[in-house]
Figure 1 (cartoon, rainbow, N blue to C red):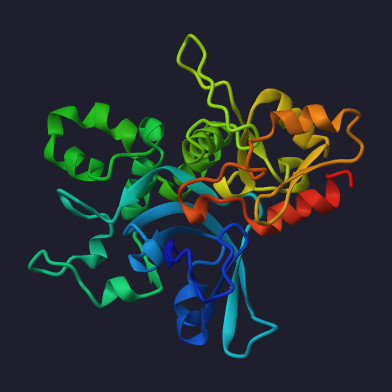
Figure 2: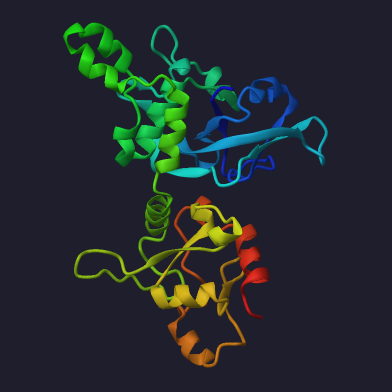
Length: 303
């Protein structure tokens, strides 16, 4: 097993769905096989309006041949393991590249290697990216340079040894499992919607400076819905209650739908934004995904 980097564009021509699967051509098969049962980090390139950096992590369950397309393969994501970063992580910092393999001997970027859609990454680099992606979790992972520090400070050996982990892989797994997904989900969704209720269009902030809006799952966690922006929507408390009970729904184009089961539809429509459409995030990649909206209409919304 080994860790890897999967390049994913928001406008990918492949049948990618980062929460569930990653499609790739046969030429990457041997490389991708090394990452089965281990973690990968998603990298967003410049194409498609990308930001050149890392957006989240996931664990590869297995790799299978694509039953619908010859010479294509699917890396299946282990259920519940995809997790977007709280903070976008740029591929380059003042100290160099987050992936050490991207650095040429003269310090410049290896322009060929960064084009690889699937590539390996060291545990140390993976750890460093995770630390930046989840900044409040810094204390849970060993420092990148801790072994160097230990060897250079004999007088501090007894204290430093406590930071060396015999099983770094297990430590990373433990750390990832401890990341508070609810906190990450709420922060990302509220930022995407500017703390504004998508249905009413209202942005209310209480006296303590906290937004009076909730991060709602479109497909609930109980139904194996992921904690991702595309499966989230910002809703006020009352609207959230109605959405979860199927009294309000959304079309793929974000047209607001009110159930015929509502006892006072005029009152509900009076709460809805004048446009009749849900307030959408600024970035296209943050909009509710049609797959989740369809699930809500078919399994929750009361026609």
